Length: 211
Image 1 (tube, rainbow, N blue to C red):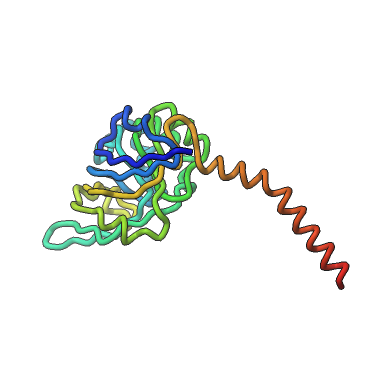
Image 2 (cartoon, rainbow, N blue to C red):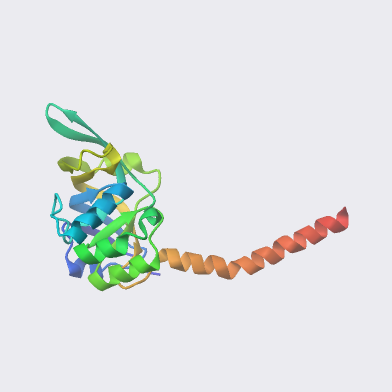
């Protein structure tokens, strides 16, 4: 599989998204929106369903499953760090959000399921995988806190907009054509499972013989 490295400016265009393939490395510049909260995503869904405006325009945005810790200094919010959380927790919610907002990029760690991948393919969206344990690296990309919304929620559940520079490297885990590294790895693991189990059984038999 041939992979490429992309320097991309936000907001992403459909053409830029369609040019990405699974395994490609991506660096982002511009505004991203982050939250690690299930209640936050449910509130997004409720606003869309009820026809209520969201506190920020998420149409065509990059919405990432990143937790953050913010504090107020001299009347301004400062984000001290951001860290990826597991995206699979959001599987039931993301297809509706992706389709409704026509998101261009989502991401976190651990991937999303094929229902999400189908929604992403329909609207032209990619899943970007963040390095687990890479808090220090990705936090260096934060240049400005643009806004902090829904501050009635705990800090890492809030809807935070950040301006970032050279955020990455991020890996395209699911592209806008329906290809998923996670499904490929899962299928490969399932193919190898019988061989692994046979090997374990042979070892058990050998051990029992020696006993």
